[in-house]
Image (cartoon, rainbow, N blue to C red; front, side):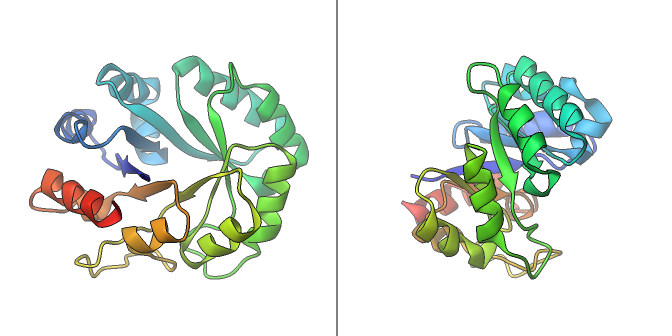
Length: 213
């Protein structure tokens, strides 16, 4: 079954910890993005690890190759499961970041097209990620099927997931329901606001899991 990744998009580490403790019986993976990591840095990663969760460090690396590689190595030393890197960073950045992994971690998840952007060639970027032996790709909405039709060896990570009962799309232009994403081949579903804003976040997670079984 596909895994849910809950996005810890909070300004307060204690609140993020409360959410991890509430949801960790149902969710194994937690996303730490630019917001929380900028405020708390490695402490945020350490918090999730201490609670028994796996960390998806969503920093979307896009810099000179050596800088991307050093960031990947640092994420490995923190025990992160995965980290994002923009495929547009180029082949050398992808290559050096791959070489910087420690025992195969963190998994490198290449960003194809951001889910807030409506157009772009996701398949061409996935091909670049495949050539660089990245473990996975971040695929937005309607592009999922294109990727799964052309590649079989990726961890397919899909943001912009919106359950049927959650009507807002916010800043996401390419959205899918959990069931749609899984049926098209998603391995990981990144979900934030629909869980975070729910009156009962734990019950919402349970309903999402039922919908994708």
